[in-house]
Length: 126
Image 1 (cartoon, helix red, strand yellow):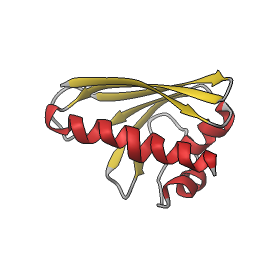
Image 2 (cartoon, rainbow, N blue to C red):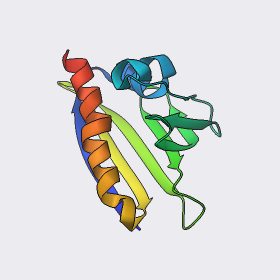
Image 3 (cartoon, rainbow, N blue to C red):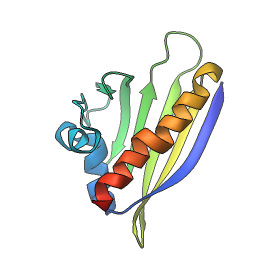
């Protein structure tokens, strides 16, 4: 199991970024795909045509999102924590993803950089 930690700059204020990460209609705007998402702890979610799915654990309005990502029934829980920091250019998102299966690490990290935060950053530059 591996861990990934990174920071991403998004050209929008934290409240807009939070909405973009938690509202199914807004997620559809920047991904182009339907999403299942709720800010109710314990609710299930799925993104990117169900290639990402899991359970929502914790939300702090405009500041923090914690999720469990599913990689099957084996091993410890894979936890994603996103912390939104106000930044002079908009928002700095601190990402920490723990317990990533070794065989999925490259795909997951590239997905975070290009598909997830790359798409979100592009959306706010338009």
